[in-house]
Image (cartoon, rainbow, N blue to C red; front, top):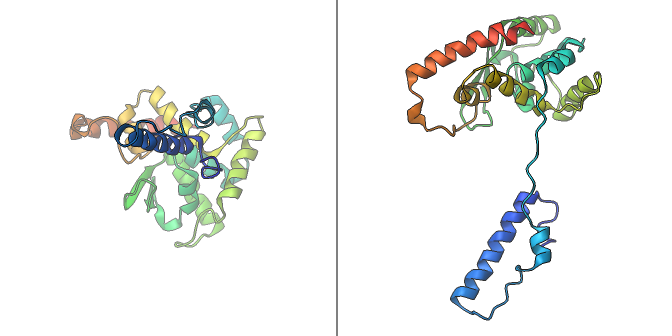
Amino acid sequence: MIKFTAGQKQATKKLKYSLLRSFFNFIKDSVDSTLINPCDTSILRKIFRKAKGKVWTILDRDVVDEIIFKTDNDRNRLILELMARGGMRIGEVLKLKVKNVNGRKLILSDPKSGNQTEIVYIPKKIADRLRYYISSVKIEDGNSIFPFGYTRAREIVQNAGKMINVNLNPHDLRRHAATYASRSGVPIEIVSKIILRHANLSTPKDTLEKSVIRKQFIGLIIFIDKILGDW
């Protein structure tokens, strides 16, 4: 069992161990009551115990502001802003092409949620900078705006954090966008559905009436421009 699960996440190891242990318990209960469950030992229970939950660090707005303002390279700053202001995943940023940009709307093809397309709304100031960058670099319509891989993008983010002695990862910026919106009064359903673009909401759909969502969505657009757009 230890060899079979080597290199896997602790949660995966725990699941496989629990299934195997349950299987032997089933055999013992229904076939042979004298069977000794080989998984029922203190050593194995310790090895395959439940993984401890990770405590996420939420970056303060002032910290994110400083990181972005100190990033002089226009391309690198846009990458940081699209995650910190638009709640985008790093993979989504890297897949962006010129044809996906429509003013303040970024149209994502084949998103992680499984939908055919998704729309990311960004502050007007960032949309203007993105449009200027595309024009100045002369990127063609079908080409990637940021033509490099995840490793390079991660280095850009980490180096930006190092400027102010902060251990920074791409998802820290996406998490910050959602947390700041929530703390500023944006309903969690809207944060989840529009900013993070999760496939499912924990809140039942029948509680999210269209009229309420419409009003909250309009409020979110105002929030994006007045609060996030000031950065």
